[in-house]
Length: 166
Image (cartoon, rainbow, N blue to C red; front, side):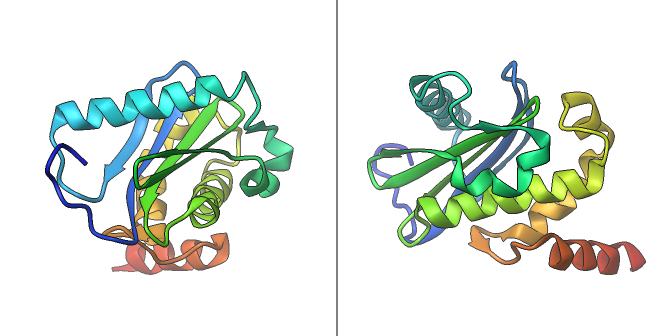
């Protein structure tokens, strides 16, 4: 991601969940990068979202299942950036190679569906923090080491139950 660093082809590079006010709630970088590079990516994602127009990629909580069709999309070099919002939460993903905007939108759809299934009270920063551990487990099932593993809430829910049983 930084100057002179090689990015593996076909990976999810980053997934983030933030509040509408911009507070990072959950963030995963799947390649080791420096804090300054992480800050640059956060800035690129926020600028891309801002340039798409207020609310353009946001859906209501009742339309969470249609989120993948409403995502904002941008490119930066070889990377694809996708973002969307549900309620007071914003979801972001960056990928390269075969992880194009459609695949990244599917990742965000899976994460938003998981948040909906876990939180059950609404897409707010407070509710996300209340269920932070379970949301992290869900994201681990969705993306593992930069590779998309599970994208349906039912599969993710069953995998979390298995982990919790150990």
